Length: 70
Image (cartoon, rainbow, N blue to C red):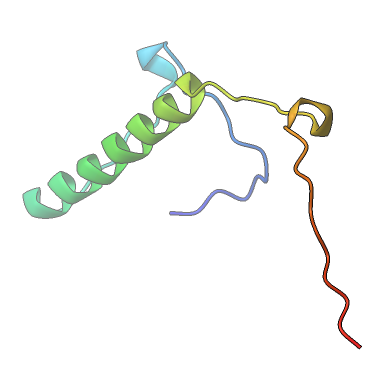
């Protein structure tokens, strides 16, 4: 299943708004549930990741020696 939206929606906390999936076989249902749980955990991990921004002025200056050979 692939979403047509380019934006990533936030998961709903309301159980009535969560999508339901119906499968013909139990093994298919287990695989779908596994993929859904993996995607949810991945989303949660990305949301909890601390993003560090560095500016070029924050980086230490390194002297570079250039050798010109003729």
